[in-house]
Length: 233
Image (cartoon, rainbow, N blue to C red):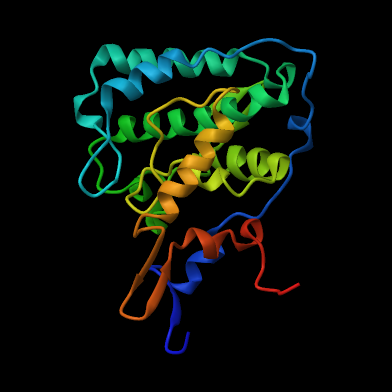
């Protein structure tokens, strides 16, 4: 169609310089396909049930940080301690996937809670550049300190090679895909990621066409290597 201009929304080109590359961390590659263990994410589900506001007019889910009780902060801490105590390498691949997604999302909620109120997650850590908490060591699993970037770019992305990961992990910003109201499990991960992708792509912050411009979320620019190329076959 003539006259259509492709544009990326609300991000300067230099922002991509701060997006981590895929850096596979081989120690997290193994799994135990004989394992029948099911990871218990019920505590995380309890918190989502209590504080995630869904069904809003603008279609954006919001976590009600201000309402979180001291008891439920303790519940979140206990959930994360349980996740840290697990050995993910002793899990099947199907159990590992939701383990890492839920861990990422719960850690994000915890770090915001620890600094609430805050105008933007980018104001948490990162010094004067305001780069946010993504490179801060937040949890130790199997003796390894992990950052959010480690989980996303060194474990999830290189192991699963699934672009839907970007719809599943939540960065606590308005422009991000929604935090899921349902904890990920081995039984629902595939369907949940499909739904998360549909929800984001069909929301104006994901893909929007207005005034002869096709506007795409910056996610598709930052992680273009995950979503494919412009090369025609």
